[in-house]
Amino acid sequence: MTGLTTHVLDTALGQPASDMKIDLYRLNGAERVFLKTVYTNEDGRIDGGAILTAADVEPGQYELVFFAGDYLRRTGATLTEPAFLEDIPLRFAISDVSAHYHVPLLISAHAYSTYRGS
Image 1 (cartoon, one colour):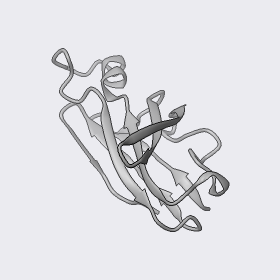
Image 2 (cartoon, helix red, strand yellow):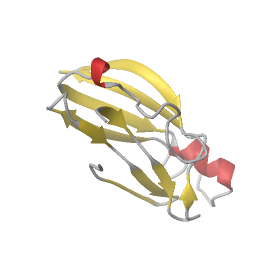
Image 3 (spheres, one colour):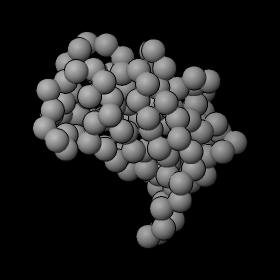
Image 4 (spheres, one colour):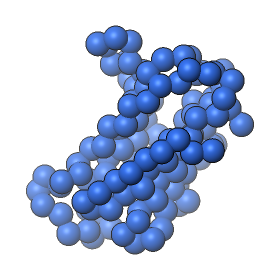
């Protein structure tokens, strides 16, 4: 598989984070270009697999914005208002358009982590 994928797991509940809104942007210098909005399914993944297919990927910098606050409120997490983790922007670069870039998010109400997955 090539292109860009993600997977969101709620580490506090020990389950996939379903119905989380995610916006994707491409960064062109100081310009931030909106590409699309996707939502996670019951498995914490995007229906159809890829956020961007190999044909849509270009080398450069990208940003995924995970709307964590909305998701956490729906799960009943104890939050301040605004939530400590309201929106989570993750910036990363794609250098090899023939490779698979998997950018997962592990989340709880007060912490998150990410890594380049496989």
